[in-house]
Length: 170
Image (cartoon, rainbow, N blue to C red):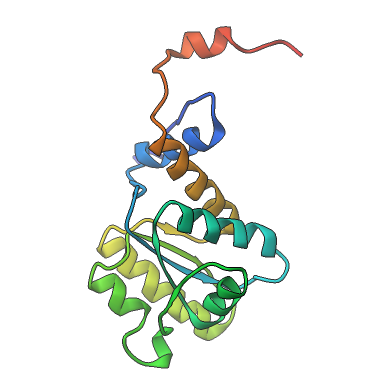
């Protein structure tokens, strides 16, 4: 028999609820350290991508980024350390994961053959070394906002009945 596990993160604040849901699922988000960011679609989602980078910088995270992402962020005033993609030589993204230099990975790859190979290798390393791995900008946005909210405290513990009682009818 197979069972699908589900978790629930509750809070009056969406960002904190997201953080709690990741915590409950066993994907502990870091409160400090370094983040590796490699973004494929920087043009269409530039405002959100810039906000993510600026928020990580504001929280004091060191930001590692692949070349294109680093150029994009530096133009927006976000400081990054450039790291090579796997095929570009060493040290590369896998090296910094294996050396435990990153605490979080945000990788939004294109559906290209080389990108898929890199994405697979990065995902496997993230799983092996227990590094949280985010593959969408929406997930990255919620992650950085959740980390910021968690730094301000987990909020009050409330029962499901208390949450239910606070729901207003529409």
